[in-house]
Amino acid sequence: MTNVKKSRFFSGTGPPWGVLLFPWFCAIKATMNREPVIIARPDHPISRSMVSPNALRVLYRLKDNGYIAYLVGGCVRDLLLGREPKDFDVATDATPNQVKRLFRNCRLVGRRFRLAHIHYQDEIIEVATFRALAPEEPGEAEAAPPAEGDGERSRRPRHLVSDEGMVLRDNVFGTPEEDALRRDFTVNALAYSIADFSIIDYANGMEDLRRGVIRTIGDPVVRFTEDPVRMIRAVRFAAILGFTVEEATWRAILELAPAITRATPPRLYEEVLKLFLSGEGERVYQLLRQTGLFSHLFPRFSAWLDRESDGFPHSGIGKALEWVDGQVGSGEPVSPPLLLALMFGEYVEERAGELIVAGMQVPDAVNEAMAGFLGEQAPIIAIPQRIALAVREILLLQHRLAKIPGKRPQGVLARSCFAEALAYLRCRCAVTGEGEKVLAWWERYSRDNTMPPVEPGTGDGEAKHPKRRRRRGKRRRPVNA
Image (cartoon, rainbow, N blue to C red; front, top):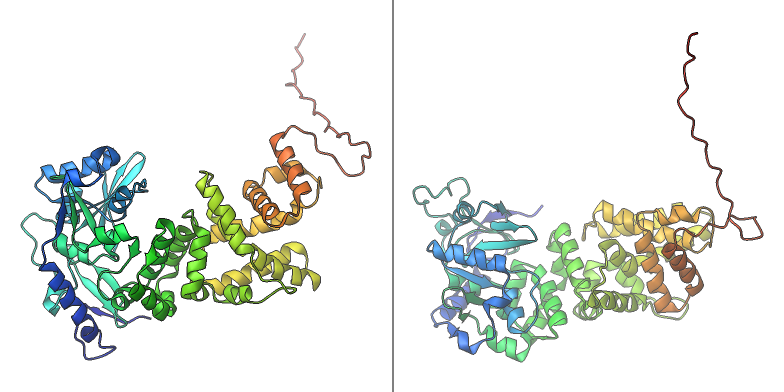
């Protein structure tokens, strides 16, 4: 179990993270002494018409109540690049409880980072209070006494780190400058002010955005130690934006790749979905392999990929991810179970095939192989049980789809994972060129679900229609004469 202590840079036990962090902290403080670059409205392309109406409502209500309100992070970056943001995040000097009092549709969430979620019918706007840099003195880890009526007594802001230097909780509130400089990458430290519609650049993010560079703010070794998931985010941003990773940042990822397993398994599961459903999954895969992150996220699967089968390398995952990228790019949804089945299906099926050859029944073999894969991944990436069951069903259905028409094909259509299983078969056909006849039959049959199933042994191909049951009316009582 990870030892936890209150944030204090100098400690008598454990690694000397105070000594390592102090130069970075001083460098950030020196950066804060410089005036931020302000890009006035005429000199940048962001217009309020490009911003979500709900985000504008949040920004204006905060501003009208005397608070600072900025759009921050990825949405500002994407708007400047001409991309459509997936969501809009707001940062403010209002505390979470103050935000909650302004919005009836607000819910406070999170322990590691206390956030306010403003719920609208079709969107959630995330509002974060400006965070401070890690406190210099032990006393600064605790919040100042709340103002009268502030309502913050029940949750005092704190900053907690592990003995390894990983940030476990960060609820020390600070200034807009501090908040920007504690973010991960320079291109994510840009802010859009609703007060005068300007862009505020605290970390030279505009220059890195122009050059197409992913660079950490501060020492990359320290920043990746604070939060190992930042290494995955660097890869994802480089892939989806078509950027390059700055040299020092790249070297730090190569050095610290084994530390990725210190992140919590549920969080890594969510990050894996973001990586491979980004529309650039194949490029993400190549970058993960180059940095060594992939071999630590999927150790046994990665070792299997490195081995040849019958003299041929296992290249199916790259081709499958190209197919997924094509689906995402065309607006076709790819569910998490289908993604995982496409990525790891060949690996699981090979193991199941060995068990079938050894005499095990097909359902038992697939169950055993799937359980083995989940057991390998559970300590690193926590795949939810319902997702794992759906992946197993997709792989199991491949054996049934191969039998056309087989018994009761109408029942196959009713299976909950039939659409994903058919999509899996469609991808396999596109990648290998095999199974096209089977795919064509099931696609035709699923389009015309009134097509009568052909039962084995009929010979003439005509369907046997089930006998209709005669409805029995109510029994009439005899009338007494």
